[in-house]
Length: 411
View 1 (tube, rainbow, N blue to C red):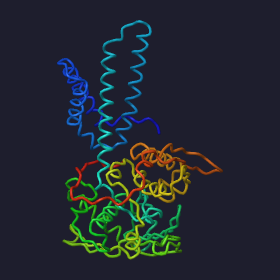
View 2 (cartoon, rainbow, N blue to C red; view 1 turned 120 degrees about the vertical axis):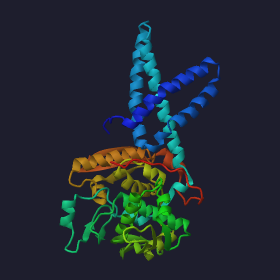
View 3 (tube, rainbow, N blue to C red; view 1 turned 90 degrees about the vertical axis):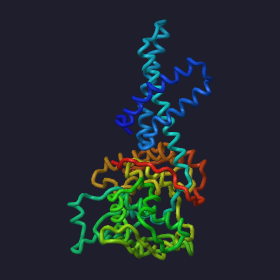
View 4 (cartoon, rainbow, N blue to C red; view 1 turned 45 degrees about the vertical axis):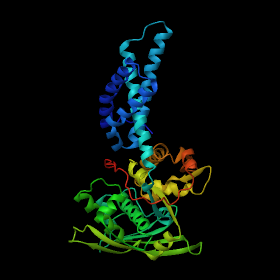
């Protein structure tokens, strides 16, 4: 990944707070506080002063860490050169190095707080495994001019989608399912879990928004939830060679709407509650344990849509417990509609996403692009942190919701 400029909001915060924290640290040293008490005092003050960093993506924090570590190394070399030549380092250089080091400490503290936040049990959400394996969710939609050409005279999109699995996709609203639709779907599966794994669940949109970790949802966000529910209900799929959890056999096809029935409650286009019934196949599969657990807190913290769409898929791949994985990037482009008209850009988006799954998610290690027999592949290993976590299981349900974060819209 090419070096990226630091997030402006992040830069403003650390440039403001680092000098104040350094001054506090000096004052505590002057009055004879122990190193331990100084460290604890600075840590507490740092968390209070820089809590806004929790609302930024971990990818931006990681990028800032890399940028600042490079700057710190340059200042250290400059100071060391002076010492080797028996020259007193410029006090301004020493001060600048101190500032950079404190900024790094702020970033490290924020990243650690993020990691602890991701571990909250209520962040674990189920998603039906076959929906992850098949090309159901797209990283992006084609431009509207192209979408118009794809719709039939009734405004319906009917497609044969290829990738790692073949899927026949139909959407009566003439749209693709993208990241917000997937986020709503994952929220619905969480409600399925908390409502006793019933095939039919009733809920108000606030309850669903809570499971999606939307802070104080606005009317616009409720409308987005409503639109996604309609998109999901309007989608029918035919899966080829899916695994039947009841018989553990591969079946040639299964046709269904993942959401079999949808009853919206409220004034037209202003509905704020719903009753959803999942298709028999979905209920049977989920009840049979054919799902994976993804971390919605982590999902929301992923910056790029390509990363979000790859996250459940890569998590499912890792359940194979291999030491090394290699995926065909051409198939990944087809599977998730990753900038299919620009091969170079699509590969770049995939590699950026894989690097975010390494840095933010700590899911994979050493993602590498390679060309073999005219096709591009990405290889990777399981991250040690993923191995340490072991197999993800359904979490213990708790009533208390974790503090909700408000993340900016992804690019």
